[in-house]
Structures are given as structure tokens and as C-alpha cells.
Length: 264
Image (cartoon, rainbow, N blue to C red; front, side):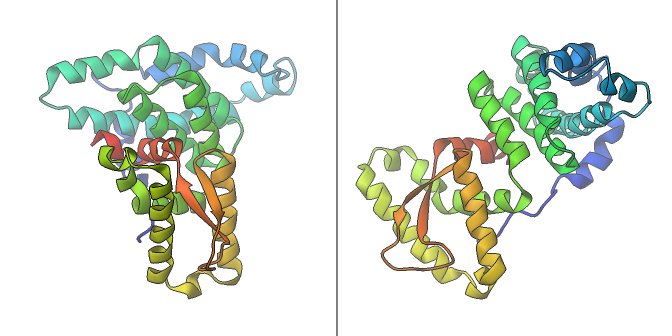
């Protein structure tokens, strides 16, 4: 199974940078929300705004401003992709633009920045922007769910996302209505069979030694953020891990939000 290439939207970010001021919005709703609440947000986080943070804010390109800029860059690119997709569908396009200004969206923008402050990795900031807009697009803004997805966005490495992508492609058909209705024991048997086929089709040399440990580490992180779950120890050891894993609904939704699979 092929893996998702890292930073697949980089070219689009660069090409769409000049579109950051869109016709429908006098200024990005992301920036309007965050700039107006950055100081109060810092207070809520218990940051010493009167000390080092205030000193940092005196310079032009501050760390916080850089985070906002990186998240907004990918958010703007995601908005442009959705607007292009909705071109000619006036009603849906209007509803999307209204959703970008909704209270739920405002909360999501703030949450993205607060989670973004936990990492200095630009790629993770880019993911946050894409995730935020895609969640707004499909109206997936339940605070608890959104918070968990954003937490996973900043805690997972690129290799973790690739592993999740492989598991997603392996098991996505098990979320079809006719499959979900089957007994759970049948689902477990099907998942075990899928993993056997997966390892039979992989070049085992790619999963030996350090590479095998990297696979195990990714599965451990994916399980720790609630995206996959172990279905128990294998009876026959295949691959670098003693466990087979089930893709959870949260993992399905998270991967689709990052890749825009569900909104194409």
C-alpha cells in the first residue's frame, strides 16, 4: 500500500499565498479572530504577558505571529480549494462563507492557535490550518471532538500520519453500512485477515531493525490519541509488531479531515 507523501500541499501554499485576501472576505476570519484575542488567550493559558511575552510582541515577526501566519497560510489554501470546488454552486458557496464567520468557526480558529503554540514545527501548523477549515466545511465543530483532533495534529509525526494512511486504506471499506451491521467478531476476523495480507504484500526489509521500531512507535502514538486500537496479540507473528490494530471512527474522521477525502 502506498504511503501519503509528506507536505503534499506545499506547492499549493506557495501558489495560493497571494490569494490570502479573498473577494468574499475583507480580511481572513482567522486573522481577525486571533489578532483580536491573542492577548486574552495568553492570559487564559497563564502566560506571563507582562514579562517575556510582552517583550517578544515588541518585535515585528514574533513567534506567535509566525504561528498564526503559518496556520493561516494553509487555512487560506484550504478555503481556496473549497471555493473552487463550489464554483457554480451559489447556495453552497454562500453557506460555506457564512460558516467561516460563524461562532463555531471563531472558536475553532482560537483553538488552532492555542494548539499551535505547543509546537514550533511549521508542517504541524500547516496541518492545523487545513484541519480547521475542513472541519468547518463539513460542520464537524463539536468542541470535544475538535480539540482531540487538534491535539493529535500537533502530537503526531509525519511517519505516524503515513502509517495511519496505510491502515485507513486497508480498513476503510469496513465502514460501509453493510459491513458495520455485521457482528463484531466477524469484523475482528476480517481485520486480522487484512493484516496478514498487508504483511504478505510488504517488503519485510522495510520493517526490520530501526524501521520496524519506527512502525511500532507510530502505532503506539496513534493508539495513545485514540485513532486506532489493538485487537490483541497475533497468533502468528508477521511484521515488526505483535499486535493487529483496528481503525477507529475517530481515526477515520481525523485522516479524512487532513486529506479532504470526505469533502471532494
